Image (cartoon, rainbow, N blue to C red; front, side, top):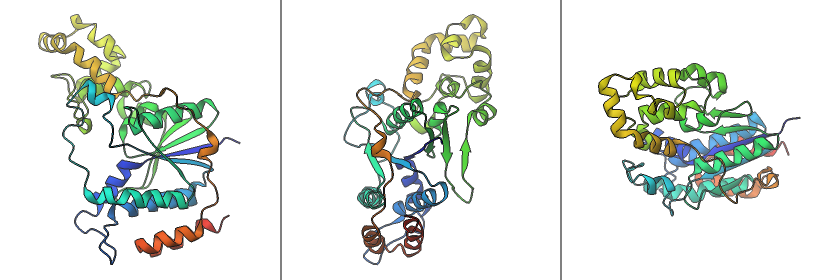
Length: 297
């Protein structure tokens, strides 16, 4: 039987939870803003109840280190605002919840991001025969999709969950393989990370060029096939295309990191601790869902 590993990309889901309630934040009677916590907790419990995983981990970015991408390109994610205080205060509670459910969590470090750590774990687990589901709202993970690595998009704004595989990405972006989305976004840019893309090339042209050339390297080395305006822009900004590709590519081989599967194995949750933290957060409905999960052990 194939072992399944679920990897939760923490921060996009926490941010989504926070902004989903931005007009009507949720507070406990003591004034704690639980908006960043509640959707993450629902997702965790629903995944445990519905998918019945035996292996799981939650991955966080660290705010203490500058990523290698920022060092390479100072404008990388430069447009992003400071983390809201409510999210900063929510993280310790989310970690408590994960501990009570015996879910392993870890932080990216040494200049890498959560995406890179997830990518490295996913590839090492795939090599050990696992089927991996990356739970995220971040499209960057589309590049990692293989027969054994899927992107699991959780329910959001009334939509049902979606599990994306190779054919979904090929159909959505017109590429031959999910890895080609790296080249596609390197050309057209990725506003979410403040990567502008090559001048004068939008989504339509990027898709056309990827279909024709297969990669950004082939495209940059074939300026004679382009009209004068695009040719001039490309020759002037060739180095940027290669830089953008480096920024967009998720690292899947972080040095000195090893996937120790016993750490990812889910153990029996601690009901006393679950009850204590959920009562503090005043998660009454969620406590019932948590009890449903606990009763399976």
